[in-house]
Amino acid sequence: MNLKNITLLFIISTLFACSSQKALFYKYADSADKVIIKKVLDQDEIYQAAYMFTPLFGSQKTIIYQPDEFRYFYPASTVKFPIALMAIEKMNEEKLGLDNFFFVEGDSIITSLRKEITKIFAVSDNDAYNRLFEWLGQEEIDRRLKNWGMTNTRIIHRLSTPNSGDSITRKVMFRTDGLNQRVYDSKLNVIPKPLAGIIKTSLGTGYMMADSLVVSPMDFSNKNFMALTDLHLLMTQLMATTTPSKLKITASDKEFLKDVMSASPKSKGYDEAHYPDNYVKFLIKGASVFNENNSIIIYNKVGQAYGFLTDCSYVLDKKSGKAFIMTATILVNSDGIFNDDHYEYDEVGFPFMGALGRAALERVRGM
Image 1 (cartoon, rainbow, N blue to C red):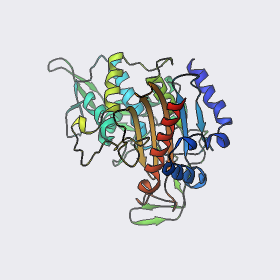
Image 2 (cartoon, rainbow, N blue to C red):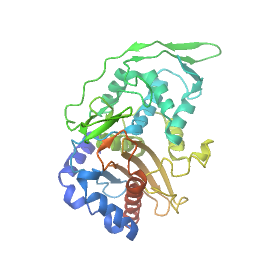
Image 3 (cartoon, rainbow, N blue to C red):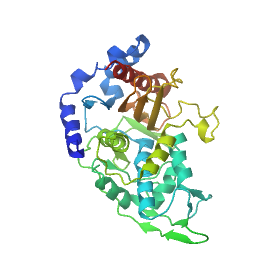
Image 4 (cartoon, one colour):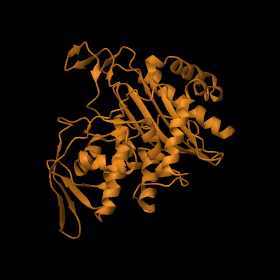
């Protein structure tokens, strides 16, 4: 099956999704998980949940529940996933390696791509993402997205830093052989235009600016966007062996990525008290550590900001020998006020994501 046909399948699936897919995983959930799944999916205007599910066996038919495909959601740290892959592509093209040291002008550390990409997946480190962003820049990011066929994604800013949308990238210097350096000069980038199809980018009833409430919807039109279909397709290209991939990465690159995408923070040297095993594993593990940790392997990337939770996961179930890809998002901001840090992550978001993932896992085990 080629990428064009997969994309067409996503579109066709969407047309038949909403009413029949709402209850698809409900019957596979246990009694406690049924409550939160029903609560969220019955209140679409509040929680705006959407998901995609592809079993990687049998017919491999993709199932989509997305009541409004044009509705904006903030991708938060899920944009680190394509940026990490782009950095590896560029590394290969430039004949660099994961362990070549590099330095971003004005930064405080000398590091390597291996270290920064590990941080991105182990604990979703913003500074690591920003360093790779400086090396790539908005124009190159947009070009690589188009090369992958991902035309519904726009990544234009850094994360959690002043002047995050600055179009001028900083100089980046790589150590190559011995004392030799390769210098990538600062560049003025042309910012890609907003995506024409995503029109509902003013959200909520207000937002906080400093200590003041602005009584007006928050405008997300100048923020990053990654369509659920693009995010799901990226994981499919990376992990599904039967799917032709446009990613220019090697077998050893993929093994490195699989290691860091599935590793617990503790295994990469982080304090378990601050970074428990479920820290960046929303689907299946959810609000607590899943009690079957040794029976599944989860390769994923999550995002969490402004009340949005998103997770794109490839799940390998060692019990059944089956695998599936699931991408899901939810908004937990019931008061409609953004940037106030009053979100229902613990009460609704994490429990729902965990419940949905566990129900999908049970469905796969029964297929």
